Image (cartoon, rainbow, N blue to C red; front, side, top):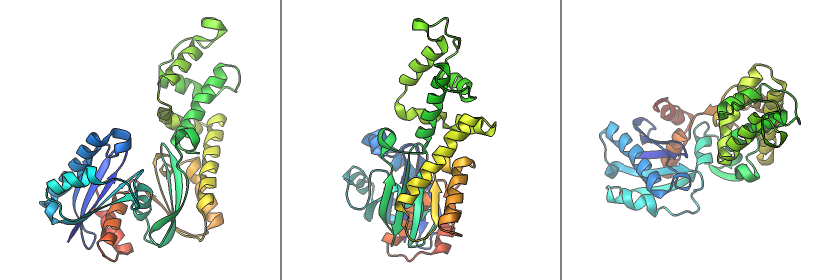
Length: 328
């Protein structure tokens, strides 16, 4: 029996074809497979491309697959239309069962099989979940850039932009972030207040225009600059990352209960640095000795969920086999 796990993210899509023992026999990639961020036509094309890549590598067809789990933000097993993807796959020969699962549940299942545990994602956005009996029973944050995503890449990037604006406007201290943000936005004007309109510096005027020309969520692109400045011991950058780590701790506390493994993913929490250090210190104090597992995607977890849906009993060894078979 073959099953397939599909991790359909806003940036990339990964499809894993596995046997009932968790041995990966095919792997495929695509671009954004999330219909919310990319629209249904693009998302469908990329999901199908990833699935076709996995099938081609194994020399298999959709008729050989008994169960497909598609993990993506905005969908879970309790609802959400599936005909946009199920109907085309059926036309391609799929006769099995397709199930949507939360991307957060797939991320957790990529790092742990314990019935009770926690998932924390912090990339562009940020959220945390508590898992019990293989299902999500509590969720915190994940409310988007306008209302939440505290400690996320967007949150950090916006703080960097604000720190640069504050320095140029005379409201905040000098920081290494200012030249980094100016360079990243192409604001090359003079930083003194003589050449701009209404007594402002040209650099500030250029920076403000460049920032408002972006979609708000694109401020997340400045987050790596904060890590760079903190590595150079800039106090403003260090403060931003410390506060980001504390925000992530508070988000995790909102779903915390019985101690269990914590699986974390996303560019901010996965890289070494202050936010991860703050999380590890909190977990040592709160849970003491529990696993802290970093994962780079939900592909393994989607595959594990597909195995479970197909009635296969999975364990740590199954997870090890699945993870070992997925290309880096």
